[in-house]
Amino acid sequence: FSLAIKYEPLPILNSVNFVDDFWYVVCIKLIFLLSVPLFIYRKMGYRLSTLLGFKNENMIKNIFLIFIFFMIGILINTPVLWKILNHSFKVTSLWSILVGILLPFFQAAVPEELFYRVILQTRIEKCYGWFLSITVSSILSTLFHFPSRMLLASGVEGKAGNLPSVILGTLIPVFIIGVIFGFLWNRYRNVLLNMALHYGIDLLPSLAFFMGLKY
Image 1: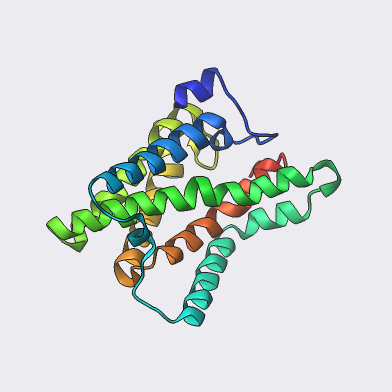
Image 2: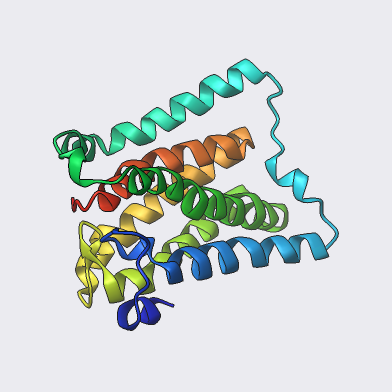
């Protein structure tokens, strides 16, 4: 699918980011990283409702924690926020802005956290313990990002064909963030916190790309 994006791209609206391509969003994320694992999970006899279960039943505290983690994710990309605020909104359609806001939640936060943390990490933990579960799930999450960046990246995530830049721009940061997400899931067992942090990190870059900006 990374090759399909490279040679037969199907960009969504006016985004200049390769992860906002039909092949990436629908085929890679929504089908293979979300729908297929959920189908297997259900066929194995598990209820899909268990995927969103969490220990803390205090609703007010949960909402507060979700907001805090979301804002932490936003603050990580503060420089991107300034670029967005300084951009002329007259040349950007409201539809592009809406898609830029919603897409990172449904194509990144939801599928990646459900698969790598709730399904994969939890199963590895039951068999081999928490340390190995966090390590392995973080490594696999990192490797998942490698082909697309090696073939397509041009910016802070590395440069296509340049392995050192992809390692520094994508693999190392994604692994570190994956470990953080892993510890977060291990500690709270509340996937909504993971999704909030993940969404907060990805939101501003996604919005910027749909506004025609690069960072």
